Length: 300
Ligand code: ADP
Image (cartoon, rainbow, N blue to C red):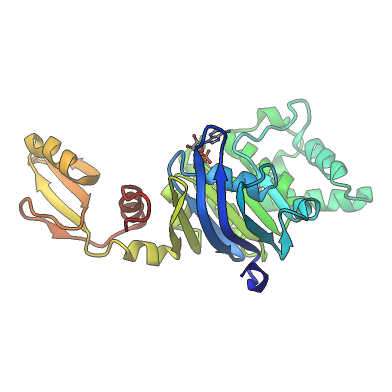
């Protein structure tokens, strides 16, 4: 029962049906602890629906959510004060500098007096690596810097729960790594950091727990090591000729096909491999993700 759960976020029997009868979430049960938690799933899996419910923008059709023991159906105002949400399309005000924007956000959130607000802004800018850019117009920042400004504006009121949607979409590889490291640093501050993403790399090195959603079903909930272990003995490497590629792509779930002298080096996830010599290899999270995404309605 939710009352007995001590997790910062407790989700029980959560179902959401949109008009037109799309069931975006189907009886989801989940406990989310402090630290980095990855919510992973392809487009249409139900991630945004779950997040919109958690940040009180959407009322679920059925089910119950407790955040720090508060009932989402009753204590919406208090829950909003506990949570910081960074949506995918975060926009700041083009005319304001980084500093002015954070000062404005701080005023809106009622952080007073001015001296306390300014100390907090300085600390936050240091934390997200934007102190040097404090006098730049927000509109002139790079994609990665804008995302970090987004984090800064959620951090400024020191939320216990941070919810971040598609954290690295549109970032170049260097910024992607930097942004992941920033989130990982923040997760040491006794917060819940919930990342929603369809990119395995966003969560593989940073999240201590992962939930996988597919077509509204929670198909996996556990640690990254447990996720990879689900496909132990099901990942294969095989050398094939170029002519064979179409056959293998039709018959198997191909993770990668790297051109080689003979044709291709395939990486495949399958229960069994019976089409020539193949080597069983150590699974990674990408393999497990692909494996779970082909299984709908809890077949596995
Ligand atoms: P994700 O964020 O994982 O891509 P969503 O939560 O956005 O998934 O969508 C889950 C399902 O709900 C999809 O089938 C989507 O088409 C549907 N859906 C999302 N928003 C609406 C809406 N406002 N009205 C009707 N169907 C919707």
